[in-house]
Length: 389
Image (cartoon, rainbow, N blue to C red; front, side, top):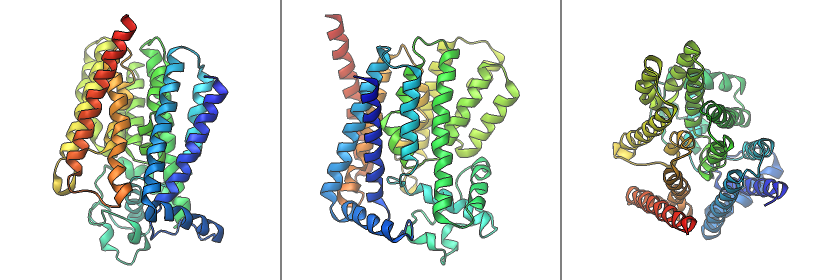
């Protein structure tokens, strides 16, 4: 497949995802006061809320398109048919387009904004005050989880409070400042993955970059929904890069900043200490990173969910994906990861189709994980047999 054709495929795919994101704008949210935009918004909202069969078809189509482009790009990279310039042109193009998207698949983004707003607008401590404590605030009309106080670490406030302040109470400006933080962090994560891959002397350092940055999960959950997991992940990747370069002070600083965003990366501390005090092989380090990230996903799933019941969320895999991408020789794990990350997006299918989460959504997510993992194993086994023939 030609480079230009592939690039245009990604541009068109990203534009379609951008447009689809506007179908999910909350009915209580006026994204802009511009009259032309309001007409545009209502037309798209009609598809998302009042023509759900069509919306569902569009959603599945986007998963198929993004997955197809992803697999094609991986194949071209494996065959060394894509150079570094082309890969990064695709990544920057996709990031630039999806920067303008609405956080279609999660309301967490609004909670990030409100947590900082508690500090900049109300001059109060978000660890002590929740959104429901401000019943007159207009943001409550389109927020969810308004009953909880600030659940993240101090680093996240360090990054977001200045953005809220710069936003000067303008919703649209603040929204895109927060979006810029997450999108830039995702691109930074991809850049650090390449840097680490070169330190580890992987045969094809562009492969892990594409494996991570253009994965449909990253497109939907990072670039579109804007989960703060990517800020946490990008910081820990910088930390390990500096650790490999034996710049311990900077490495410790970035590790602490990462932990201070969402706590999950605290699980890397044992490996971190082991690397400092005992020389370990690169293979051991990468395998350990992927394993600990997987443990982190499991622990996060067990500690979350409604009424504290264990529940997996697709974006939890954003912690796992960057480190798995570096497992160059573990092809079966790469296959399974591709299947799981793409299939996890199907967990939104019931809500998009019906507007409500089914009571058995936890079980459905677990089934999706199990079936996709088994499918990955089967496809890997078949591909290996065919290659041996």
